Amino acid sequence: MIKCEKYKERLADWHMGRLESVDAAELEQHLNACADCREALAATGFVLDSINDLRDPEPSVQLKADFRAMLDDFKAAEKKKISGGRIWSWLLQPHLSLAYGMVILLCIGGAYLLGHSNNQGQEVQELHAQVHELKQAMMLTMLDNPLASERIKAVSYTNNIKYADKRVIDALLATLNNDPNVNVRLSTLESLAALGNYPEVRTGLIKGIMTQVSPIIQLAIADVMLKLQEKRSVGSFRELLKQKGLDDEVRQKVKETITKLI
Image (cartoon, rainbow, N blue to C red; front, side, top):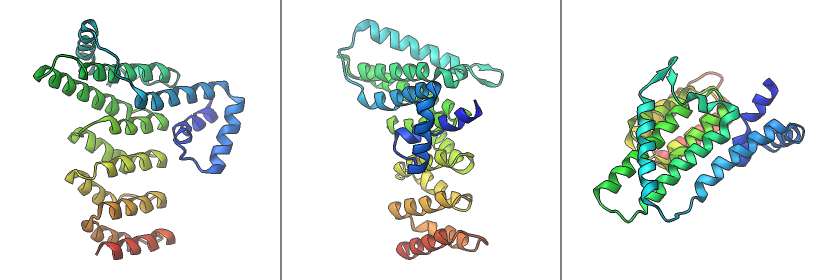
């Protein structure tokens, strides 16, 4: 079981083509012999792929009413706590990943349907705001999941959020600086880079330079600062160079980054 959990943490990376060839081969060998992990892979792929393939079928009056009721129920449930966790925490268990994915798809699908309704104006805007809030709440809830693959999935949902509020940005920065899994941190850094137009994101990334100890993350964050042309990061990179035992490749990359930014 422990061995399976290790492999399940890599499923999202495998599906998105992020695994090294050796790790991918090892995972594929395990999948050939493990039906439970194959099922988990199917659920992971279903969620990641289906969100990008949503269509715009004709809405109905009943659908609109049902979706409103679902939003109200979710918001009410979010206010309650069960043993110090969110009421939806049971949905985040590994064996229910497919069911949870279906819930997410229904919610986002409802947003698409409502967005193409014949009713225009303030009412539709309010519904979109509620859907946006729902997406953010789901992402924040999933970031607490003990499985790294679920946390990566949560981070990926920022691609479906039109704008990020302070809660989301703070949660992403905390994940980048504190998550124990390097793949989760890499995925988070990628999402934060996409939000580079937010001043608080840039400031948080600069502060995080000295927090990172993984050479992989240090190299990646140097690339992000170059992409964003964030000259304010030069001071933090110079401080990083003073660290004893800094990886040689990282040291060279940081020096090149400083040269290109100044």
